[in-house]
Length: 425
Image 1 (tube, helix red, strand yellow):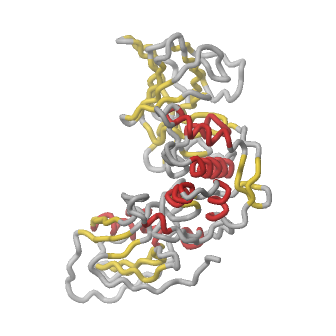
Image 2 (image 1 turned 90 degrees about the horizontal axis):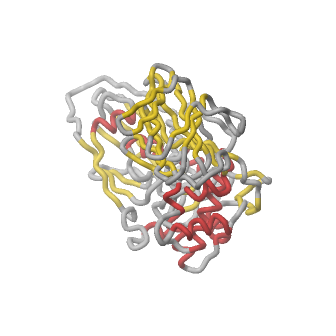
Image 3 (image 1 turned 90 degrees about the vertical axis):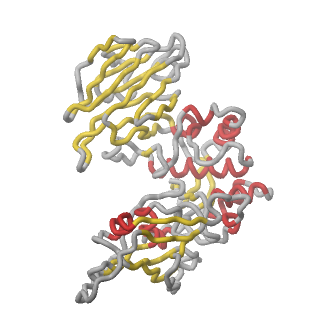
């Protein structure tokens, strides 16, 4: 979620197709210069760090970035289903913890303590999963020996040391797409889910308690940051997760993605980070239950890495009004010491990416039609070689072209700057 709420909302567009005259040059690339990283809505993480360094408290930081909110304790003990493997064809899970074991169960067994495992997987063996049609096919691999398990649509994995399976405290390693991540808590589900154009794919989820097992593994800011900044992030992360808890998403078999489309979740690695993990874990523990609310309910606590000097509102970014978002000064984001990578930036975007963003066969000219008071692009217009014109929100353009932010100008062209009516207070 952090920076990149990928809510892609295309601006309503007018298609104009004047008669084609002479041939025009089609640029191979477009040059963009900008500042900030992320959508700019909600708390600026760089700004929060600067305020913490200046001695401000977590409460002061949160009240600065979010409008008309209360900070109060809510019950955060619910179980979250967090996606930790999306659109996969293969995956494997194993444990190297001495005397630990894993169990595999057929189906999604929830909190059941009566389910009978299909097999017990010993240390230094792995459970491998592949997709076959609309089912998942597991197998136990021990050295050169492979034992197949009857396929099913979904399987549950438990390991010793969790609330589901007593025993030595085990840590499991999940490997997919050349990445291995360690997990300590809860249980996992491996499910075949139909993807729109890809057929069936494997979705892997980790079912964990929000209050600690999940939040201890959220990695949105460095654990070396000042205590107040960590506490502000812990409260914002708890709030965001609570706002999504219980809203099931079939596409990922989850409540939340473990990626930045929601919040970055790195499992056991965050709390065991050498020298620093204890500080993030303490920030979560010391803010236990504290949540940003309006009318007693958690808000969708958007946050962003940094801005172009002024934060943005949800209505300008995505066309959706959220009363707790506001545009406030965020000059620390433009500090090259605090934000060395994104206080300013330059990007080159290929013709193919820009054309795809506007759903045009090609783009010969780009024009920034208007900007918001915050400095983000409100509307950007593309014209094809056939004279067809289409427009997008700046945030939509950012998301589709994967540039750092919507605080940008086009290099080498006329930038029309006509601020749109402000939605900020």
